[in-house]
Length: 170
Ligand SMILES: [Zn+2]
Image (cartoon, rainbow, N blue to C red; front, side, top):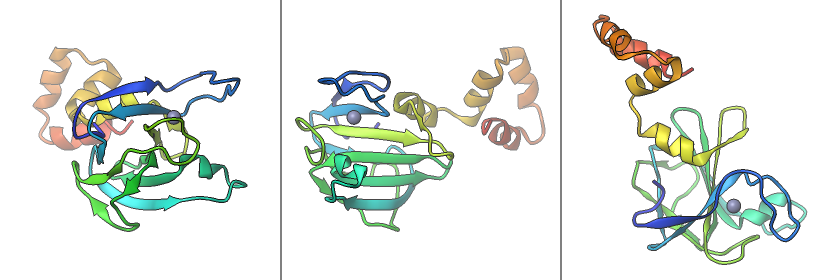
């Protein structure tokens, strides 16, 4: 998860309409009880900034941090009150990214959390957060729909760990 403590979802990923703004919501909006936002996995900080030029749409994100994961995903933490990380820094799961806030195009304190795959296309952040907590074996079984017998057979493969690592990348 991206919070140290409890949180709720104030706006899910997907189509929405806020006062006539019908743009697809490319992230999830979270509101935390404790406002401390943490890295859900290891990675490297690629951006930690605020854009104030309103000709650049990224101004809407206010203070934001981009974290790139080892599996090639881009994680964006937006509207932060403050940022705790610098560009180029590596972070470990659980390290503090920043404090939830209300900067940019925002109405009330929340964190717009967005996840993009390698091709820069946004994906459902909740599904992503669930997937990073799964083992390569679990991902392989789920993706290919293998039954337990098949998995037991694959477990006996001399390089089963390497096999699952490869198969889980599909
Ligand atoms: Zn949002």
